[in-house]
Amino acid sequence: MKMLKAPERVLAEHYHDLQRKPFYPAIISYMTSGPVVAMVSDRPKVVCSSRVIIGHIDSAEAAPGTIREDVSIHISRIIHTDSVEGVQRETQL
Image (cartoon, rainbow, N blue to C red; front, side, top):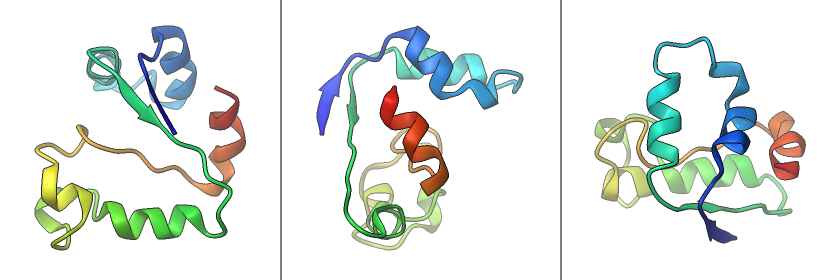
């Protein structure tokens, strides 16, 4: 786990599948507005267990005690979990 300022070129690669979406510029703007915390784990079933801790994608529906329920103010403003399939590509970034 480390805190870093993500370069725009890395974010463009990370979110390449969203580049044609209307909200893409807002994501890049937000993600470059300050530091991010990046984490890689080799724990078994880490994506599944992380999603339980993180909570429902909509903070209004997240269970009490989850990260999104406790601190999220907008659906796109707190945390991202990916699929097991995306881990290899994202880890390289």
